[in-house]
Each structure stands twice: as C-alpha cells, then as structure tokens.
Amino acid sequence: LVEVERNASVVCQQTQNEFNPWPLLASYRCQANVSRIELRVKVDEGTYGPIVVYVCPKIHPKTVQIRSYEVKPLSSHARVHSFDIARPLNTLSFSGNFSMAEAHSWLSLIVPGVPAKPPPTDSATVNYQSTSNAGTQLQTTYS
Image (cartoon, helix red, strand yellow):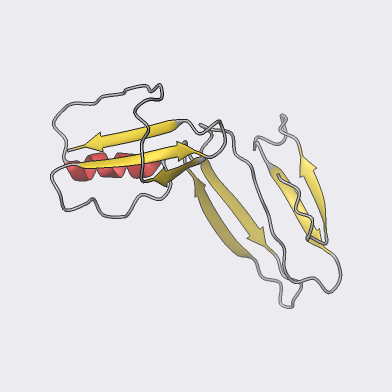
C-alpha cells in the first residue's frame, strides 16, 4: 500500500501468515463526513492476480459493492512508441502452429494496455518500457 496524503481514513493492514493466506489484506475506515477515498498499491514486477475491493457504504440497508482489478505480471510496463536498439536487450522467441490472434491474446495476459483485438496486419511490433526499474525495455513482435 502506498500512503495517500488526502485520505481521511484509518487503515488496518494484516500481514500474511498461517491464518491469512493473502499477500495483502487491509481495511480502510473513512472518518465522519468523508465519502471518497483513494487507494494506491505498488506491485512487485512478476506478481499478478486480482485485487478485490469490497466497498461497504454507511447506508441502510447494508449493501456491498465488489470491484475486481486484474494485475498483470508485467504491470509496471507502459506502452511506448520508440525502442532504443543501442541499449542491451534480451530475446525470447516462440514458434509453432498458433495464430496471430492467439499470440495477441497471450500478450494481453502479461502486459497492460493491449487492445482487445489484434491489429489487421500480418505482423505487429509493440514496445514497452518499465516505469519502475530504470526504464528497461520490452519489444514484442508477432506474426
């Protein structure tokens, strides 16, 4: 959890142990007359899965809204338009009998900001840059 100065709330955070299998379990209680809260979570690169938020407003009858946000394994990468070929890079190649739509679907599972549909071309190249660790780069090309 990342501290947000504007929040007027009390946070209670539980550590992971034998009774709490989740890496993050926290509850926020807003102060009187507060109806808005901002939550920020910093995720380690490679960590993935859903973040589930239960919102319990102070109204009657008691109701709960559930919001789920999917964290992708390379969630700290943002799409960029340029790729610096002078910088060191790693290469990972896949070959086999799969379609471009399948490759596009695989990419959408690991990095954020991938459009729902693959591009209408024979091949696609997409560049990403990490926003957290010195701007490391990722270039994906699939056809």
